[in-house]
Image (cartoon, rainbow, N blue to C red; front, side, top):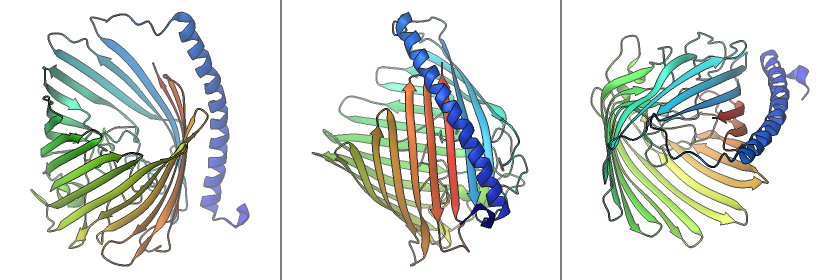
Length: 429
């Protein structure tokens, strides 16, 4: 099909994407040279020889420049977002077992805003959820005892694979939690993680937009891990979420995410094969206006084949009374495909059969995935997705990433064919 036959909006989007890719190819080439020069400079200067410590602590900087392209059927315009996330972090030295960390982020748009950031009002474009703003990403006081760690303040919390509690690090504005976290790790292969959170600082902040920038309420995270034997681990978790209603937002954006989750996870290695199993049950709780109960299952096998790691999985999310299984505090982009079609589970549930292959081409890490999505409660076929990611860690300071995903469906009444692409450069100092 020639370009003239493509819808005007999609053709314009394709042209913008071509120009963006050309620009990024140049940046990648220049960055590779700069990364080599940095590495040589570090070697010449003996950079690996660090001072024993700084009594005032350490300051670090991190910059992530990213272009994201999104083309969704049903939109006359495709989205192109070029954003820069600038981060400064100060971490104090440890004094009498206490330590302080302060971290601020700024997200800026480079060029014109041809995307819906969820706060800029550009609703004619698909969503790229990277709104502009400056935010205090982390601010905590930490105490480390012999077997107990207590952290108070704004902090990232990541449990396991981040299936239910995570930092959503893929987005430019990460998710952070205000509260108190206690981690206890006595001898014997057991550890316990407890947290009380009264505010969830979401990726849509720092200002309210189509979604609230933060959720407030009384939330409890509990996770326990046991080392059953060498390379065999069992985990149990409970997440009790109760979010307050917010004026101007529908219940689905606040209180209908109030719920209780209880579940078990197992991971074990048998010679060359790794097996991962999950089971969870969920029901409405607190201020929720819903009435449902749903379950979640996962069975996954990981096998190395030559220089490639193959992962095959089957994951099921149930639905009940028109409500699908919910994961409001999770890191979602890493699961169910990179086009983010299933950030919310459909009311009739979701079955995901997937294959992932991870390998390398020289210094470049390569990951490819394929997903087949169907309803859990019927024979509905939602569609499929293919994705490819290339990551080049040039050195400890510079990382380059290219990524593409495409979702296709025959159920256009419920879903839209989607193409997304990303080019990213991340620098740390």
